Length: 365
Image (cartoon, rainbow, N blue to C red; front, top):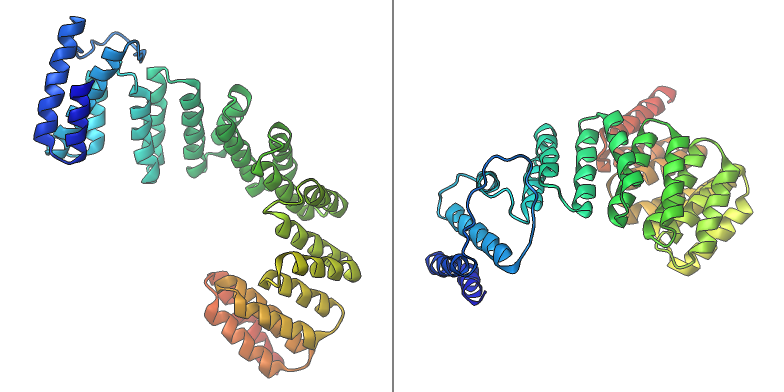
């Protein structure tokens, strides 16, 4: 162990020749002490990685360090080639499942999801521990998701949810499944997954996020009462939540859509007192003034919010300001504001929308 420690120190200093010398001495000593060598495995079926004793695990770590030095000295063309070679020679290395997972992750991060799937499935040949099993299934599901193979992705996410207890992985699986259902407009199914997340992990931040997402989905379904009850639950049960401001903003939008402008303004003022005058709150106040037909005040608030926002959010605020100008019969100012909105927008669809509104103004003129 001491010899390996010295080798590790030299390795950390990038003095690989010295590191290799000490690793070789440590390996010889370990083999002599245990009267066994860590030989390449024969093809006897799926490996069963074990960390059965300190000498075995030390020897495995030493051999991996040696192969890493070989990689750095140019023996292998890539780190992945080195990993594949090492796993082929020593499949019973106790950390083999993790190394195989690294190979899958390499391809996943480079958007080669088909090859990532192939490599992730190989992890199970090494009988990984439950936590790594769960994580591997998660990345298999995400690979399917990235390939737009949503049925396979959902099946895998469901398998994780029903067969594993690892909190982070299960939360990710529940959230990802809900997102797929949302993208496919299956809002009821998405809500069910968010509810399961909230019920299984009620004290997590993800549970608070779930309530906010459920409220948004109810709004898409025009279920205003359910949306209000969900937001109210989030506000009352999590008064110190980081999501409180977003919950209040959604509640204000609901009140505006219902025409309950007095309560909407009360909530906006309460939000200002608690969090300060953020551009989002100013925008909400502008919408309230707009619904009250106080267009000049609404325009000023929209422009004020726009000054504090960036890119597409700024463009959206400017479009609202232009609409208020139109209601004040000032089409020239509206055109100027829309041109500014078009210039700051990043989303091409938003640019087109601005252009269409400008053309409409020119035609009406």
